[in-house]
Length: 380
Length: 260
Ligand SMILES: Cc1cc2nc3c(=O)[nH]c(=O)nc-3n(C[C@H](O)[C@H](O)[C@H](O)COP(=O)(O)OP(=O)(O)OC[C@H]3O[C@@H](n4cnc5c(N)ncnc54)[C@H](O)[C@@H]3O)c2cc1C
Image (tube, rainbow over all chains, first blue to last red; front, side, top):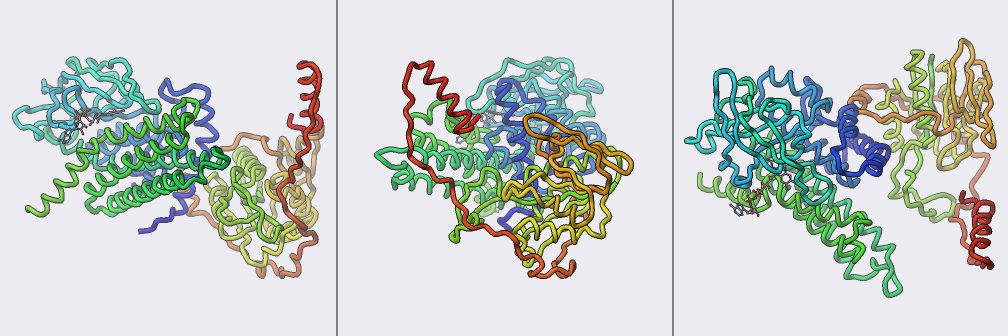
């Protein structure tokens, strides 16, 4: 395993840096975080960054997950949320690539790759988060269409996205095996959205999604009836690498700010960075980041080689998001009172870090997955 | 239309620069590098001219191994092929005369219609290399170019003069143009471009290939001492009414400190 960046990874990092400095920062300065940054998202498509790890056949970049993770990390390191936008946008792409029919692939992947369409992933419901099998949105087949009834919550890109992968129960008696997944388009009849939820952190665009006799053509079923839970879990296995990557970038961003501030800020006649108490904090922060980055690279490396990676991906997600929480907490501490101010960057990173510990399987759920897999091996 | 762009890799703009031990230049350890800004505009201009008129864009750069990164970036943005002057002997060439001589030698047989360079590099800022290349290759030249119109057998360029004045001149081709930053809007590389750059020709050229020796490239000019501008602790107090103080301060800032 190589820890240095390949030539093209280095070039992609440069591209991200140039794009963030040249377009993203000026855009956010002008428009703020309130609305979904459509012009930036479309640009990601033009730059070829909206489908990095997916096959070139349908307009993807054809690169590996290691490279994808490097790019996502860089977007976050520069203090933007575009890495997370790409990560969520990547879930429907991954699912359609891996489980979709050739027709579904032809129809949806090219516009998703070009960022003409935005994607979303809708699993969580008001009464079923960690316990995803407990979802109650129903899908009933009537002739050539499924009728969906139910409600999702916390759906990133909800109301903005054009394409939703929706998990719904087709056979209640079969538990997890009675769950199916569907491609639902924004304009399909019976689909509507709640008001914007406002999770803390950098601007998230999440909404409740309602299905009121929402009609979905039969050909939009992904795989077979009953495959939905497996489809969702497979996507999340890979998604965890992306959450880890963006969290490491976020942590690095907070660290870079804190390091700089520790030299600039004076107390008792010297830079606060001259105090051992601050130095130890900085050392622990970077140690946590480096460790999490290594594990995340390993997860991507194994995935790229077609080896089992779900446990290491869970470990990466757990370590990286916990590292981000710790590092951003300490970054606020190093900034002192200013750290709590909206005029300084670290408080937003701190609030954003918390989200990482919750999404795509809370960190309790990651621990469950890790232990379950280990024990399974011993018992079988 | 065959256009060659000379590009130089320089320390990144936000680098924290430290003076090297020998006080002759900066300490190059721990520094990241990028394409010199004006050269990036020269490349962009060349690509636009190629898109409008057809032809080929070649990039040439002299520098150590790391320079490849900037060369690759140029290829990713759309240059067709590249020449990398990579040889310890070229490191002798630390002034414009040596650099110009080596690049001219490498381009002698290319038969370029246009050679574009940045107006000056972000590090040494000689502003001479383009002119020396023109002189050595017997090409015409125009400096501080703000706009380029290609004609048959010549090129019309808008040059920037002092105090907001411009000048249009027509120079016969082949010509060297030194391009001013801001002449156009830079493009980004794309993922596709980055991938296709891997397949483009990147020719490494050694000093011996150009029949150049270390002696030929010996600098005519040398840096005596590099240092951070020295601060003085002179403090001037401006007295008077607030309005007078403000007016006097603005004057000082504008004409003495020249901060705006
Ligand atoms: C900003 C944001 C964006 C989101 N985007 C999406 C999206 O795009 N699509 C989507 O489908 N969902 C999304 N979610 C939802 C997210 O995936 C869920 O919030 C998460 O899975 C946790 O579910 P819950 O909120 O229902 O918490 P619960 O499952 O109710 O958990 C509450 C607490 O109990 C703990 N817990 C639960 N079970 C166990 C157990 N067995 N052992 C130990 N502890 C346990 C949890 O770890 C947690 O601490 C998003 C959430 C947020 C905040």
